Length: 45
Image (cartoon, rainbow, N blue to C red; front, top):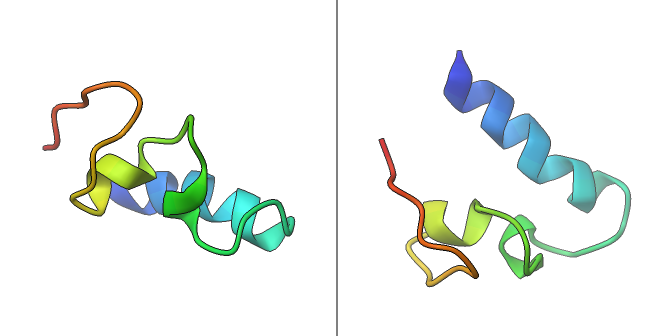
């Protein structure tokens, strides 16, 4: 359930047209979820 809510939060910026991919947002944990280096280190579960 938590994972589906995280996807929803990450996809909000995409649906709004702010970014093309959720990983493109600097201040999102979506980068960490995609295996990229984000702005802040996040422990993935």
